[in-house]
Image 1 (cartoon, helix red, strand yellow):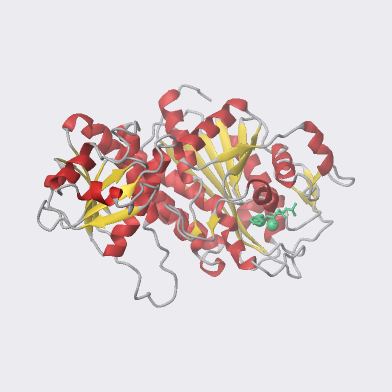
Image 2 (tube, protein in one colour):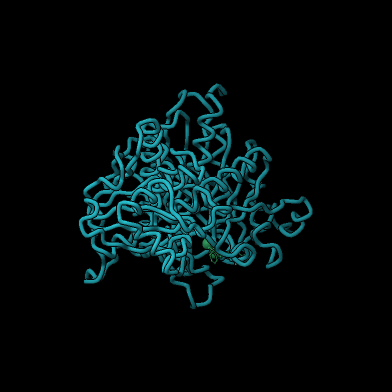
Length: 508
Ligand code: BES
Ligand code: MN
Ligand code: ZN
């Protein structure tokens, strides 16, 4: 989709469709919506007075000007309540408007900058949110069957219409960032929506190499032999039950001082999680194709950071393998020797994510990172605790956790802290190894965090358990059914702040 910024009065623009907005409870529209209302002889006021439009977030109505203005159609989109209004509401209103526009069959539309006037959202943020909402809300996974005849045609172009030139530059920058971040999120959705037979570890590595080539990133892929030479016994233990060979993917973006300490993103890349010998129940098992969503989001963040040209150094590390039962598979009771040197007793082969992340977190140490954040669909318990509203956030560095919480509030991708108290370590003590990989059902998201903490040594670290966030059963505003692409907006927001705040001075 092309995105354009135009100057002018919305009511004077010749367009297939113009989009204006209303807050809930407003009876007499003001601003650009008021101008359109007057040009239409009060048609919007009438719509409200008749009780046919209440301004609920994402509600839409279409009016036909019949020559009163040059536009063919006028859409009014609800912004919801003024008291709870923010950039996320702009994103959602834009997503609903774009979906309604797509259903009308329009190819191009013109919209005002929702939220920037009376709403009080800074113009750059409003523009970013509109573009994100539009692109994210009209995403669809193509799939493998015959194309559906009732799938709406994609929108080709959207224009944001500004009344004055004063904000034009900010709006252009916001729109550009929104487009990069949204397209990177859609890139992630495409990877996560693919079934495991179209997304093996080798295929994930191929996708990483192709993306890196496209946006100008460094990408190295380690094969099984190289991992064995390094001593990645935990990752290889998980991989040994599968006929698909594992991959370890390293991406590097050097936007700042080449020697500056990097931010490292680590992604869980289980391309299919059957549970292994500790086999999962059959029901819903097909969804375990999304157990590589942390890895995909890592790719998405690196893609966005490169296109945004952030002046920082960022590394992405992905441990990718299947987790399957077979005659070669690792078993409960086995002891694995990790890259760190710590030995791990396997209690459940279904607690595989922490095993592959253990080696990735140890590998991260060689970069002397400024901070490490891992993204992982780690525990079902996190879904039980926080549902599909927020991810679970844990870590060893208070400043890093605060920065991520702020980025979550701003980006609309929520996260919520869980504690890593020392007392929890009791649950993963082993009689035969340095630690064990499962502590039972109690506090399982925290126990996952406690396990990872043993390997995240020597740098500030945070763990984001995204198990509840990566998949949506139903479409809602900017989130379609299926893969959500969670994590890209959150970490891009964090890294954009980091790039602004801290000039890259820290030498290694
Ligand atoms: N990938 C799963 C976690 C998961 C479960 C994500 C359900 C989304 C929905 C992970 O590998 C897993 O199986 N975790 C176990 C850990 C347990 C054995 C300690 C879990 O949460 O049951
Ligand atoms: Mn598992
Ligand atoms: Zn898993």
